[in-house]
Image (cartoon, rainbow over all chains, first blue to last red; front, side):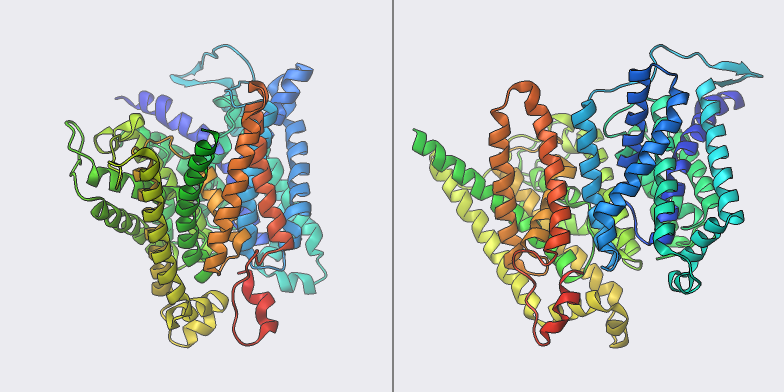
Length: 290
Length: 320
C-alpha cells in the first residue's frame, strides 16, 4: 500500500470523523468540568440536531449548510430547556443522580426522533459526490467544510473562553465553583451559557455526521463512546484537548481496520478510554479527574 | 380456552417478572448498596445467557461449545462468566467517580453486542443458539410452565434471602458507609476500591444468572432477543421506582414496571399498524419520563431504604 492510499482511505476519513467527534467532545468536556457530571444524552442530542437540520432542508429546500445555523440555535434552545425542566432541580443531589436522569433523557430524545422522523435512513442530498483531486489527495467538498467548520467553531469558543468576561467566568466555575460564587459570578447564567455552547456544538457534530454519512435514529448514541473517549483522552475540561482527543480517536478508528476485523472498529474508542483511565486518567493535556 | 389463555399469560408474565426481579436485585447490590452506576446491564445479561447456552446445548459442528452439561452447571457458569467480564472493568474504573463506570459499562455492553454479532463460531451469529434445554420440559406444556415458574421463584427467593442477609450483615453496613461517605469509610480503614469491586462483581453475577434463566425459558438465545437499551433502562426504572437500597422494593418495582410495560404493549398492539410502530416509541418516551418524575417527586421509591437510628439523616441517605 502506498502513502497516498493510506492517506486517502484511512487518514483523511479519520480526520473528518475525528472533527465530528471533537465537536461533541468539546461539549462533553465543558459539561464534565463545569457542571461535574457525565452527560449521557449528548449523543442523542446530536441526533436531534441533525434531524432538525433535515427538517429545515426538506421544508424550506435550502442547502444543508444553510440549515446548520438553524439547527445549532434550535438544539441549543432544547439543551437549555432540558436543563431547566429535568436537570436543574437535581443540582443539590449527588451528581450521579443527574447522570441517571441524562440516560433517561437520551431515551426520550431518541423516542421523539423516532416518532417524528421514523427509523429509516435519511440523507440531506441524494446522489454520489465524487471527490476532487488535490495533488493525489482525494477530498470531497463536504469533508473540507467539516474540518473548517470544526476549527472555526472551536477557535471562536477558545477566544470566547480566554478573552471575554463570561468565558472567564465559565473557566472560574470549572476551577472552583464555590470560589467563583464568592467572586460574584452568577452560577445559573454560567450553566445556561454552558448548555447553549454544548447544545450548539452537539448539533454541529450530528449535522456533519449526517452530511458525511447518513442520518439514523441511533447515529448519536453510537457516537457517545468515542466522544467520551476523546474528552478523557484530551483531559477533562480542556477544549483543545477535546479537539486533539477527537482527532486521535477518529484516526485510530479508521486505521484500526488495518489490524483488527472491521466489525470491531467501534471497540477502538473503548480501548483508548480504558487505556487512558489505566495509565493517565488526567489525559494528554492534564485535565481534571472527578 | 379463554381462561387457559389467561392463565398461560399470567404464568408467562410471572416468569418474566421473576427474571427481571433478579436483575433488579443485582443492580440493587451495585447501586443500592454501593452507589455504582452500571449502564450495561444488558451486556452482563447477554454474557450469562450465551454462556449457559454454550455449556448446556448439544454439540454442533462448526461452533465452539455444545458441552451438553446439566443446566445447574450452565447457570453457575453464567454467573462466573458475567463476574469475569465485570472484574477488569471494575478494576480500572472503580478508582474514579461513578461517572466513569457509567461510560465504561455502556462501552462493555457495546463490545459484548459486537462480539455476539461477529463471532459465529461462538454464538452462531444472527441466528443465535437454538435447542437450549429447559428443565422439566418433558411434561405437558402448562405443567412445564408452572414447573419453570417454581424453579425461577426458588432461585429468586434464594437470591433475595442471601442478598438481604448481606444487607443487614456488617458487609452491608460497610458498603452503605462507603456509599454515603467514602472519605470517612477510608479513614476507618476500609479498602474502598476492593469493596466496590466486590459489590460490582456480585451484582454482575446475578445479572448473568438472570440472562441464563431467560435463555433456558425461551429455549434459544439470539442477538435480537432483547433490546439492550430498553432492557437496561427497564431494570433501572424498576429499582428506582421500587426503592433503591431495599431488596423488597427491587422485586416490587420489577412487578409494577413489568405489568405496566406489558399491559401497555397489549394496548398498543391493538392499534392500526401505522400507529403501532409510533406507539412503541411513545411508550419508550413515557418510560423515560417516568424516571424523571420518580427522581423528582419520589427519589426514595415506593419502599424506601430501611434506615436505623437517626431518621433525620434519611433525606441524605436514601437518594445516593
